[in-house]
Image 1 (cartoon, helix red, strand yellow):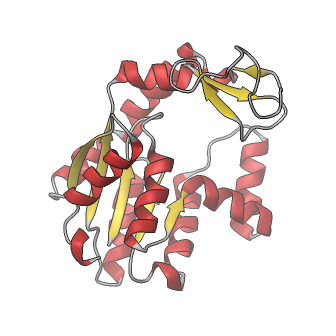
Image 2: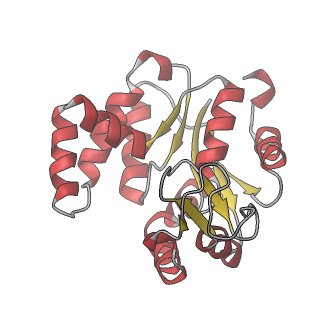
Image 3: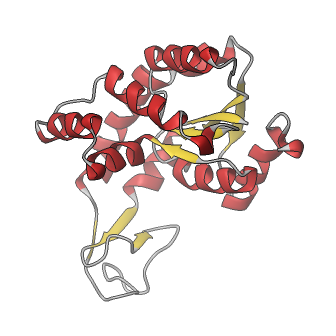
Length: 219
């Protein structure tokens, strides 16, 4: 199965991507991980990305597309994959179609995780991180610490990241609507979009997605 996962910030894409990829037996390919892996390995593309990011710039489509093409050419992606964070715009979506078409392949489905905007803001703006260990994450409403402002795991101070503040979250949502959301219409014209309600317990959302996927039972 060849799947693209889309949805606004805070929709739970990373969590669902990992669970779905494991259940379907296909690699989870994240744009963020592609960047980090190429940078850590010192590849030509990685060095280019590092310089761009160090200068505060945006990675051009052609670089992102080249990284994705390189990753999709690896043997473990030969029988399928789940893309998370790519494509981000129409140009990248068209490039992906062209890339797959060269091998006679096409996407199986585009999973659109749908979450109300106010819920997205609540999820992200309520998140609190531990200063001592960034893996320790809490939420003021959904997963509050025993003592407000104190990490249950190590006693570190809990804080709100600057990019988790409400005004920043709403700006990120605006960018998503402008840049990424149009690919849903692009793929809908191809009959590929499956909308998944991404509210509720994580396992239930995963099952909704699996049940909605074509050929999921055979995968």
